[in-house]
Image (cartoon, rainbow, N blue to C red):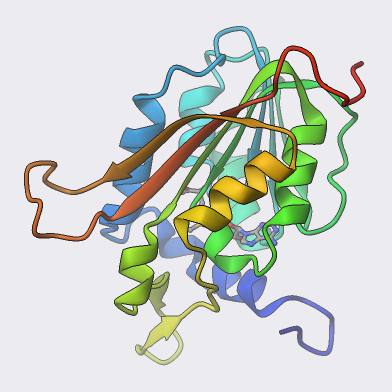
Length: 226
Ligand SMILES: C[S@@+](CC[C@H](N)C(=O)[O-])C[C@H]1O[C@@H](n2cnc3c(N)ncnc32)[C@H](O)[C@@H]1O
């Protein structure tokens, strides 16, 4: 959905949430950060793309390790927070809708990170295709999203709208596990790891909060290299 200025409603919602996003308690956001830190990713000295970087919480952790980071997001409000938080010359934040071709050259990234973004994207294929296109050979795509079981229980990104004091739900699309796997495979990537993340790992009665997927761009593939 877009308004008269063609701003997608999801971008407008995050503009509104941006000032409170970091301060609001948010177990999903925090668990995704934990999942990221547990991954064997080629961040050290690498060129990293963070798609849907939000307020730059994770960019701030990635930046000191990486050679360069590009944070893409279509919310001006979230990007304003990110720019305030991370002001290193090696980090660039770009306003961009991930559903469009990314403003990056082929095979220029060692890692692409997408966290808590894809529930807002109806069609996964174009996003995975772009991630695969910008990855170098042997580069890694890491995805962490609200688990489809949680989505089926009605959970989605939500915040309290300061103008009304009411809970606002942000437009979301259900993606089941196979859809994520298929989108990666169809983009020419190989699945390396699939994870399910609970607040209490031993609590098998609770649905997982997050799903994570790690894909690798094969060493030899039909994709163009820089
Ligand atoms: C829940 S926040 C997650 C931010 C960050 N990845 C994190 O883990 O804290 C989702 C972010 O995805 C962005 N987003 C959602 N759909 C997008 C799209 N189509 N293009 C660009 N950014 C998008 C939103 O603007 C928002 O900043």
